[in-house]
Length: 465
Image (cartoon, rainbow, N blue to C red; front, side, top):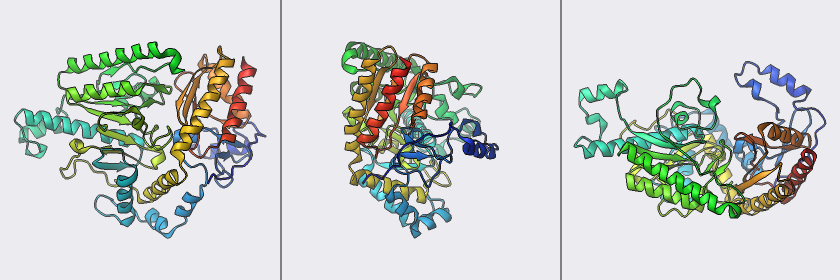
C-alpha cells in the first residue's frame, strides 16, 4: 500500500538557513559544494521529501533513480528493525568465503524470481559502476580465452609460459577492445570511464583506453511523428557498428550500451535497434552488455527494460545497481569465469543490503509496481506531451518508458530556470544531458502526485512562454 505523503510546502529559499548551516558543517567532504537539500529523514514519507528547514517537496528525483519505494516504506522499516538486519550490519563478512543464510536465501530468491532470463550466475559488488567494471572484465576474459584457445594456447591463463605471464603483469596483455556509444554514461572508474562519453567534466585529464565509439540513434519523440527519421538514424548507427567490427577484425570483446542513455539526456532507441546490435555481436563473437543500472528494477514498467525489446536470445551480461541497493552483473553461461580468484572482491555482497533488496523486490511484486509504473508512466507522458503541444517553442521531445521520463527545453539556461521555478512550487526534479529535465518518480508515485507535478509544470511553462 502507498505510504501517506505529507502535503508539499516551500516557505524558505532552497537551501534554507538550517540547510546552509549543515552543509557548511560538512565542508570536509570533497562533494559538499553540490548540495542543495539536507533531508529530514524522519519527516520524509512516501514520495514527499522533507528538508531540515521544514520544506516538503514532491520527489521526482529519487536520488538519480536510486530510490524505489519512497521514504520510510513499512516493508523496509520492518527489515531494518529486525535482529537479522542488525547482525548483518555489524558483522562484516568476506562473502565469497564466509557468509550466512541471509545471503544464501537472497541468492536463491534472486535467481528464481528476478534475474533476467538466461542468467547463469550473478556477481555482486557495492555499486552500479563496479557492476559495469565487472561485466567488462567478464567479457574481456571470455573473449581473450576464446582467442587464446583458437591459437592453440591454454584456456587457463595460469598455464601461460612464464614469459607470457610477465608480459601480462607489465601491462602488455590483450589488444581486445569494446564498442561504446557517444552520449553514454557507465560510471567514473577508469574502465567504465573509458566507455563514458556524456560530459567532458567526467573524463578530462584522466587516461583512457582507446576504445571505439559509435553514434547512438537518440530517437525523436513523439515516435509516430518521427518514424522515418528514427529508422534512418538506427540504420546508420548499426552500419557504423558493423564497420567498427570489421575495422578491428576479431578484437571486439563486447558492445556496451544502455537501454536508455540516461545521464546523456534520456536518449532512446527501439527494440529493433537492440535486436540489430545483438545480431552483430553474435556474428562477430562479442558479448552484448546491457547497462541496466538506471533502467532496471521496474522503473520502465518491466523488471528489466530489455524485456521490452523482444531479443531472440538473452543479453550476455546485464549490469545493475541503484534500486537493487547494490551493484553487480548477471552473466549467461559463456561468461561465467570459474578460475579461483579471477573475479573476487573482499566484500562481494553486503548481507544488510541484500535484505533491503529482497524487501524491495518482494514489495514490487506484491504491490504490482511494474504494471503501476507502466500505466501511470504512460499517463504522465501523455500529460507532458500535452504541455509540449501547448508550448512547442519551450517544451519538446517529451519521452519515456514507465517512470523513466524526460523532456527538453530550448537551452541549458532555460532548463535550469524551469527547474528552479518548479522547486519553488514544491516539485523536485533534476537535469540530464545539456538541456533536458529528468523525471524519476519513486515506484509508489500515485495519480494525484502526477497531476500535481503536471499542474506545476504547466504553470511554469505558461510563465516562461
